[in-house]
Length: 240
Image (cartoon, rainbow, N blue to C red; front, side, top):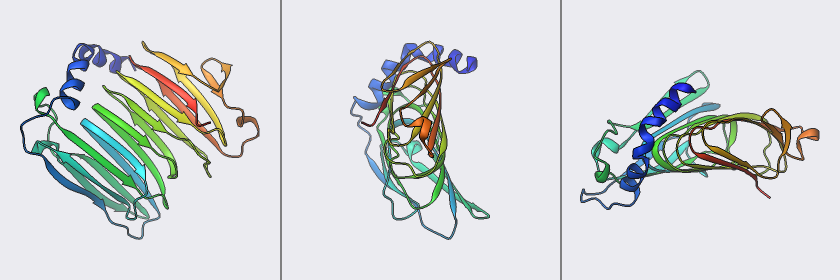
């Protein structure tokens, strides 16, 4: 955690400029559109790793294939590279930039919209750099979830009636993170506070950074959420 905070200290001074350059400035480069697709096969589980260095990212359920979506970008290096390998009964999906994201701030325009299939068990990892991310993960068959956010705002929706317990790790950097948690199944939240601040709504403190919702004590299904807070702010709240 110390290593990450040192890195964040270096970039804090430029974070506003980076985000302004990514999402407000309209560049002159010609926009390109590219499909993001991983077709269905006979695997019984997926491991999905999405790594967006710079830009805007939305992730949701609803894909008929394993993964569907598109990317709109203005620099070739920002094009998504989609790799898919099968190991036994597990399909491994890796989506990342084709080239380096060390680009001029004012030249970047990059948006990825990705849908995931909700009929297959899935381990999901999402890493963002100088990015805005909206992760609506309701309805997915998550077995494990890891989120590592850099500079930018992130919204994670884990609301709904989950059928199976799983563990979530959320590590935040610079920016505002909002995590929506379910009220119908149990939630156990463990927080490790950094330089930033946390706001926890609708959960009961058990001491030493541990919080639970009302459903936790009698729940058969429990989401265990571990959060490491960096420089920014994070809010946890229930879906109702």
